[in-house]
Length: 345
Image 1: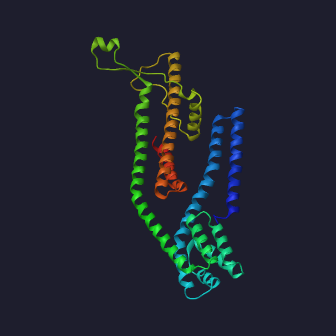
Image 2 (image 1 turned 90 degrees about the vertical axis):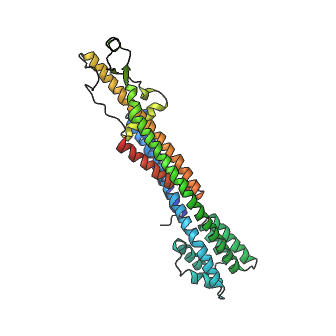
């Protein structure tokens, strides 16, 4: 399977678009006819992910393959230059070098060697090789220079030797830069996880206080001088009913299984309810409290998700200067965020 093949990429994109269309259309039908809001949100989520994930993974694998080819390319040009200096013709040189192991570059060199042996002109074969690896600017520019030098009667062997040294120098400089940047990337990971811990602290310790009303100035406490506090449950606002974002957040949280169970009945530290009206009021308070927890948990999860995407994108750009390289960092942070929220929040 050639990840750089245009037909393969086209098939992946068509498959991804078909999945997106199916799930997105199903989500619209469920939402418009009010069949199942949770299923509608789930279908929308699957549709978006099916549009993003396959293409992102394919682009990342292509990026890694281009990176591997670029690492092998200086060795190819160095070997080509040395063999050509022995007096061999270009077809003989390509045939000889195609027998060596050049990793991911080998299939392309063997194909070019076969084309030249069949009588295809050297510049045309080089042009086809350049088109098949068009995702690498370094290789494309190098092959253009080699083709022009051949057509102008220049010393192709010397040019390839010089290009091999220059590309190796560029790779070495990039390796040093990446080593220096790795320390900054580790700091970014540390900051990201500190952010998640802070969010968890807010959710675990501050949000519950919204549902508790503490009466410090009650007549009983003031007259008797008692140190006991009068605490009672307070009805929390129904955050999930505030349009336009809150209902979407709560639907997303329900799909993700973020609903927090609230213990019904007596709660330690609160007054006992003696009649049906008070019990119903307590159940209403608990239901709204549950929806409030769902809202805040969904909101905090999205906040951490956005933080992970932005931090991962910056980390990838700092390391390689290419946006597609950010995918690995974004994946690590987003998956870590999901696992932490499922297990610990």
